[in-house]
Length: 313
Image (cartoon, rainbow, N blue to C red; front, side, top):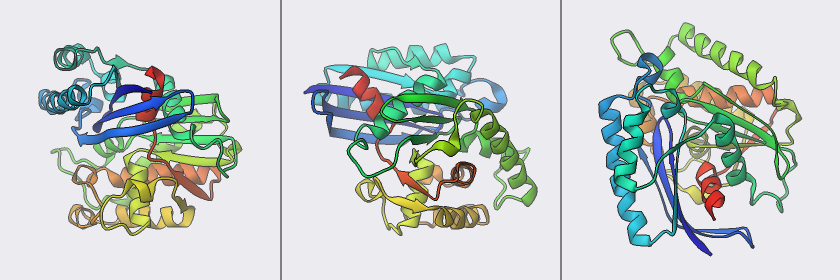
């Protein structure tokens, strides 16, 4: 066993996994898995820069993670940064802050690398299961969404700039910065147009319709699943490998798009940091299911974090 620490810093959240991993058996044992909504990608789509307050929220979470990593004695640490820090002009401010706190340099990985980590994390334990390959793994993030298809190994991957935060800020935010709740039909149509254009790009390299099983990752997917399962509080064990039918995803997406901020916040299982972006995230999931012909989505709680952990184990 090797004790490793993996950090995934995305557009909306930063997450930590400290685990004991055994490459010989394929077993990974969680010691600590946590997530904080930091919204690092706040306004990046509009300004091209990381906001000072977003950086400070992220650094505060890093200081918390540093304490956990030291306490549990991880032998190896890897910090991966994704969409928001790829896009930002001032990403060196982010890099310096992380090095000062954690002692490791964040790796600003490409979308294709992100897709490979997500695929490994989500599918490593599916090989002996009863799901039909090839697997299409879809990781819906805050700034981008990764698509990767394969059976044991990656056959094709593509990252596109649609994510729940990016689409919310682009289409569900008024000129004065306030959210439009519920969104008008015109704004929903604009989101769908962006998603359609992105899926057209994806299909140039990733054959979505060839998938035998659609595996969905990240907060938008797990939140939709938790709502579908009727959970009163978040339960990763109940969510993991649950199967949510297309019709139920369509129903939940419609409800989220027609609800106000207060109505979404009142959903018991909803994380406060997802209230304003979940409608766009659910619409991405629904659009992927409809385009790929998937009748259900298999939800995985194991994702890029697990893939990062395996990469250093």
